[in-house]
Image 1 (cartoon, rainbow, N blue to C red):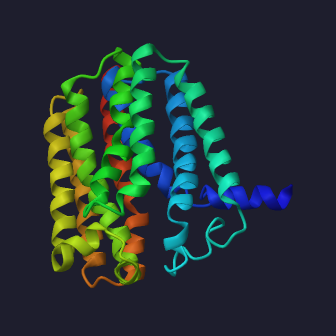
Image 2 (cartoon, one colour):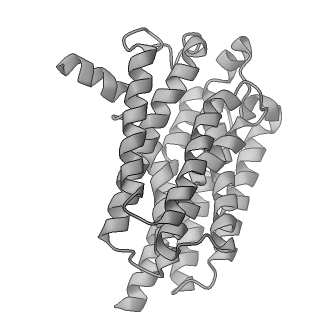
Length: 287
């Protein structure tokens, strides 16, 4: 049992929290904005645990879908499903259990959030297969990784206002930026096996596209939340996030694998910076 548990934890990338943190910070940011401050421990628990569970379920589905491709990619060749340590049936069963647990959390919110959760699940299931047919699958991932934003608004306000979709649009460009960095790590292997990624589609414009995507993301979030409780504090956070984005672009400029992977892994700090700016903005008004 201990050895199986270790394999399952490896399958869901338990030792790599950067993946679920990239999902968590924009979701918590949306919770704070929708609530005009602290949203309460119940919703924080629901969306934090739900984010971890759904990201873990997504890893299970993704590894099953990509198992024949992953064995040809240096970074993914030793994943549990790819190397045969975990069967396809086991991986899918684990993913289903995790998704059901996440749905159980959603059931403690409201009808609007429950209905939107089905759309979120559908997009999450579509993404692993988008890499075979879409030249920019990172855009599909962007929608999947940003869907916590409208769900957060739905949980707080029982509706999804235009602001939620604007924040989702901005966040989509952030996902394109950091997942293009991620795709740049595997570009040589992906070219050999015929996988479609933004790093391949963009070619020599990849670094410039990452930079522009960061700028669009931060511009949309800055403008959308310009009337936040303490705008000055939030705008300082935006500037700090921009400084991080520029550092990431500097890291990937030579397209070295290790530097591109490092830039990707550091992105959760950029998301945290914006969340901290939002939370602090409301906190100081209420104090």
